[in-house]
Length: 335
Ligand code: UD2
Image (cartoon, rainbow, N blue to C red; front, side):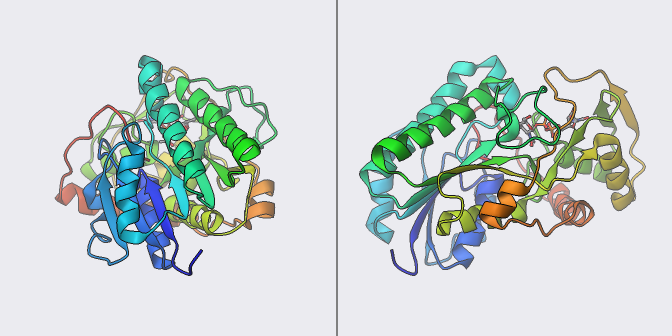
């Protein structure tokens, strides 16, 4: 491998994928983003488009991956490493349409794995999810906790992890799977009905629209800022850190939705009304990870605390309300 490896970022026009592409470019990599723009945006990578070491390929991981990536290799040489984010990311869509979820999330992963197998890719890092755990998981949850997904989305993420392990054992693939807790930050789309709570609440706070808290608001989540996630993802991809491991990526800090709401209203100086609605079907009550494995294997120490991350995200949301984005389509996605 050269000092400037060629890295493929599937779903690289999406929320977490585009931040990871930023980090990889800064590290001197040649970066190919493959994205079907179903929920990703060209705007998320506009800062990269005029860079010599960057190329965008409009295409689908469920399509002719081999053909699309041979195009990529023509310009930057063989693909050395793969960051695999491309996925249908909405849990509710996976519940309504499991066949589509399987086709995109598992089918797409299988195509990327086949490409990696036949093209001597040095390492693949997979964007997995805390959705592999259910409400019976211990608090805090660790990687040894039983994975028993409560949604087709979680099942597909877990099945993809098994595929990684299978490719490692049978074909010698080097991989890491990172199970994200609740990632937030700039470029997380607030406009779709399955958006993350932080992007929705910030958007409502800025526009003084009602904020809806499901349940009593004492449910908790582990919110991790996107730049911390992108850095650790890139670090794992470009090194031997976390090889063959499945690792939770969060902060280890448990925050209730009520506390989150107060912090957001305070930061935004907003008096948006807050109302409560019954619990959302399928919601888990508490979610927070242990940090031991991420610290031990990845030396992961998140840098951005919640208040700072919310302030950064708020600043971005304010720029977005001035330049409204088109509403996100419902099918497929890139995180
Ligand atoms: C997260 C992931 C999801 C999956 C899941 C696994 C995000 C955006 N989603 O879903 O992909 O990995 O974890 O368990 O990271 N809430 C409100 N009002 C709203 C929206 C949400 O009260 O308008 C509450 C919601 O009831 C929940 C919490 O906020 O208790 C977080 O909701 P979310 O949709 O941001 O994320 P989550 O944890 O359901």
